[in-house]
Image (tube, rainbow, N blue to C red):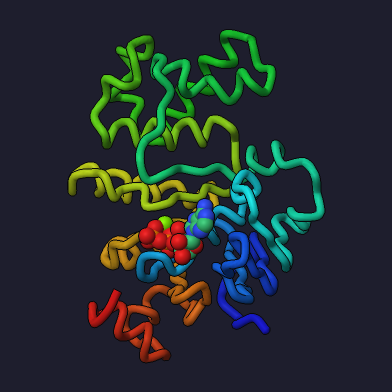
Length: 256
Ligand SMILES: Nc1ncnc2c1ncn2[C@@H]1O[C@H](COP(=O)(O)OP(=O)(O)OP(=O)(O)O)[C@@H](O)[C@H]1O
Ligand SMILES: [Mg+2]
């Protein structure tokens, strides 16, 4: 049974279980993730947040010995029944904890995905790069140095280039795994503002250890513990009136 939450469902997860070899890491996870909202996953280290996030674009397929049961439907398509994983990862982009830019220019980093999709026209690429950098709120900072190495940027700038690189693929959904944990407070706020702007156009799922961040940026919050969802609700409710004692203990810092 799903709890009825406001919004239009973008991703439906039904009875999802995941094992790493013999070890089960996710236990019957079911939830609806809403379109053009920010959904936060919180919970103590090792509770399965990243594992679950990675199931949403089949990144766990790359790990040996992973077994998955259950269903995930995105845009009415069961992603584990379709074989087009490349298309899935185009539609469901990902931003990681550490900026993972390629050792090439800012421009080439952002153009990398579109070029891989066969876009060669220079004008078209220029436009995608500019739009993506604008979309990631970093255009003004880098427009005069597009041909210089992306690795010469600050950590916070690099993380926004990673977001631009994801946007360049024209995704519907962007998954972010602790995207600000390596950033200073000012860069963190910039990325948070960016996330808030981005939800006009994208469905965003973010893993965070920072409770204030979850409260600031997300519409819905799911609390995970030992591979299960303990509570999933409007963020305001999770942080003001959690229904489960374990959620309350976690958000008030009593454990985790
Ligand atoms: N590649 C892997 N092989 C085997 N076990 C794994 C693998 N990745 C994660 N696990 C295990 O699955 C469980 C969930 O891990 P996961 O990384 O999803 O937790 P998390 O909630 O993201 O933690 P953190 O907050 O520390 O990032 C843990 O017990 C972890 O040890
Ligand atoms: Mg993690």
